[in-house]
Image (tube, rainbow, N blue to C red; front, side, top):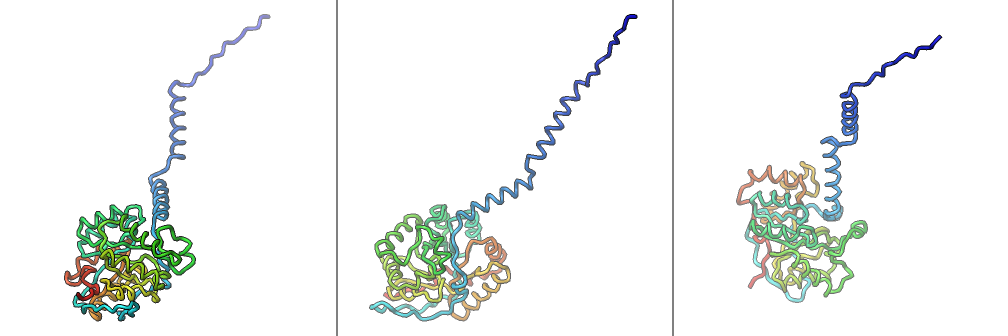
Length: 311
């Protein structure tokens, strides 16, 4: 008996099925590994925040920086006694510190159309551009000179741009000159941090000598109640002033509102009130909301509220 072989047909898959399966698989893989918009935004924000933190200024220890400073007569510590005209102007003068890191924030500040002084940290990544923007907008440009703080934690974060208590007179003045080269159009100086250095008479005398030689005014930021900067500025015959209120000692909305009310009371009670603020988003939001309600006569340029020597 002969065995007969059966011919079996091989079943072939449709030609379109395999490419389709590969396509579906590729789509699944892409969905799993490709970030969604939300994932991208989170990663982008984290990366952006890390960049900001690496390039952000070091802030003073608010525990030693009084939020409000009353007007006091300077103690004359220099041999020559200079006579000052009586301050006749009234109002609030606003200085924005720590500028040079965020140009979009600076644009928001300049768009307020208020007589604001812009104080720029010399080694900030956009120091020169910030000074040019402020100057073109008609704002007063100041050098926000980093100075040694009191808190050891903040001292450890100082870079080479800080004036330190152990520096020589030549080094202090050379660094100030370097700052002027980094920041064009400077008319005055105020201290960035400096709760330690501004309590030292000799280094501050060198700073005031430099300011006098370069026809610059000086504003004591009063980052410490022990600061002698305003006293020495007055003793050197400088045009000088002192900060009375920090607008954003705290960036909570209620605290900023209270600080603004404090500045208004300060201006009414003491004639002129120099207020320092920073380019925090919360501060800019507050000023943008407030600007339409500010009476024009309330705001003054900082030079209008400085003590000017006679003669």
